[in-house]
Length: 497
Image 1 (cartoon, rainbow, N blue to C red):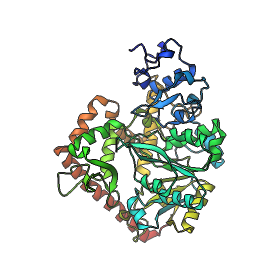
Image 2: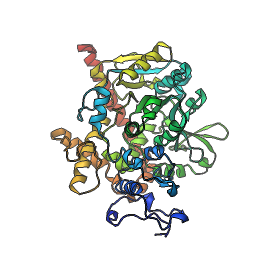
Image 3: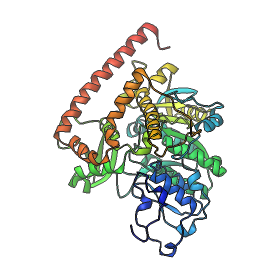
Image 4: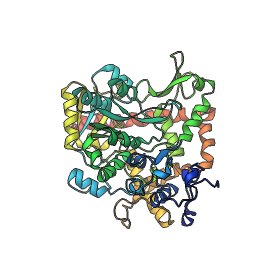
């Protein structure tokens, strides 16, 4: 190890995960100093595989000690400025998130961990009134419509969103969008890990009112940051949580980018979804033309964004995502995602672009309904039964997988996240749920064997992978047809309710 590398305590040597804190960094004036206790605690979190890479520690640091590595881990940039305040450790949602305390504050009651969808007052399908916005958004434009309405009303000065990185086009870059153009430029999903909460620095330094759009872990980090600095709670007027099966390691997109060859050198924009929902990823070339990211040299079938993302999840889910139980952003004012469900009405075609939203708090419900009244959004209310069928499979898989991994790592003596009582046991699966969870774990086996996953991904980007994806596409079409036909028959017999 370099003499300039950050020293790690001897008792941390057995921790398994690689850490950016072990990489050489240069700060000659501090070579002989013992590292502050807070930074050693942060190293323990990163080395133990507990870091979400949400950016909360970077955003809360009052003296700008921390920066971000290429892989979105916290790094030390200004050691001499560290006051050992311990905020970077206290804010970390990967190390600890007391869901019961946050739930009681938000909803007046402790949430039920086995409730897949969490607490919500109303469930809706919605889309942006303006057809251009509906077409260019990820799925329907609900999030963008709300942000534009709040900005137009003067109720926010900016929105925390993920824009595209200038150098690595596939990578997200957290920004505060302060104009309509900046909000529109940040549409479309970014699936690589992005440290959204690093922009807390700007919120704390520049007074104003803001909306925060983030993944579940980032919303967890926001709640913890509010406990440490009341200014965040005063300035963030709305939280919008995005559904999340998992983030994806940067390595996956680096391999995909390499597969594009010389086309990648001529790309000026990466678009995660083009065409009718769920769409397929494309790059926009310098001449303005679009080129498919996957199998651009083939005509006919190309896998959708979701079909390829499902492959990436099973190869490149980060360690901390495997122990996260929150798929549907249960602690946001409004939670939003794709409507993976049977259409509740014959007039609804999800290929046209719809967002599924769960309005969880009074504030979230009020702001959404006002956006509908203002003409920014068109809304279709769902029954509770319909809502609880939407995204049920994905959310169930993530929640029960987290319980399974946590209990396994507890037995192995590995580092664990705390969700309140550190000795509490999580719900145990049995019967069919046990079989489904174990099957899901098997499909993620390469997340625990990272040395092999690059080869597997390259296979799926080749000829053999193409035909497997083609077969899977046909299988999914039959599956969805059966699902929709059964739902239609039930509506005819029993009605929607």
